[in-house]
Length: 208
Ligand code: ADP
Ligand code: TYD
View 1: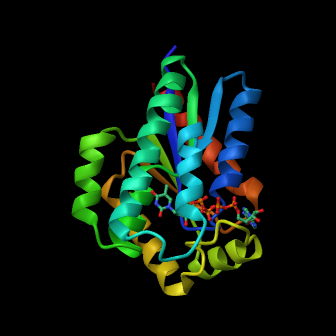
View 2: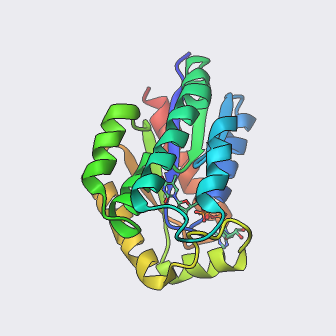
View 3: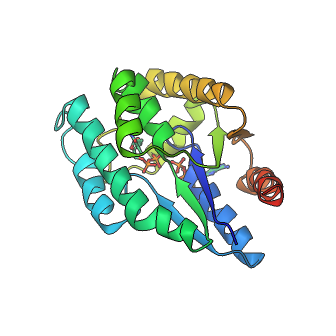
């Protein structure tokens, strides 16, 4: 039985974590074996790096150092969690992957698109089989993310302009890779969003 590698992307507060959880639960109910994971993090080493990168002062790291930390975390996540689970035939569902680095370090929070692409080729080299872009208006994302504020705040004071550019950037990425991306309207009740996500996931899995 072949495994699969699915990712969720979208701006902060778009509902990625909620939808990743709902998809894993729906596939589990069908009897599929799933591996629900997240970035930055998803393996013990990468979760340690997550704390370094998401907590503390906003100017703690330069954009270049931050890119290296996200890439190091992703490499560990790939080696220790994603590849072994896919090899066991599981459906890996990750809350964020390399598209987040393309967007944030490459475009909105940093200006390192060439370095992001070079490091990805050198150290990661794989894309998910299918990527769900949960799309919501930037104002809605900011309101949801602010309501949930906690310790991981290094990135979450960025304001509406960054959210707007990130949303546009994600939509452009999806348009550039239509075979891999499914854009889902996230500005609805969670159950309605989940219904569309599950239908797209099942259509993909049935075609494999
Ligand atoms: P993300 O992982 O994209 O940041 P979350 O799934 O953590 O988003 O959701 C952010 C916040 O918005 C949470 O408090 C969550 O309960 C809430 N939320 C998630 N999906 C919806 C939805 N479809 N409608 C309204 N609120 C939602
Ligand atoms: P996450 O925990 O998914 O936050 P949220 O639930 O608010 O979407 O991700 C934390 C932050 O890390 C988020 O602001 C996006 C950022 N990030 C990057 O800048 N680059 C990356 O490569 C990844 C994976 C995340």
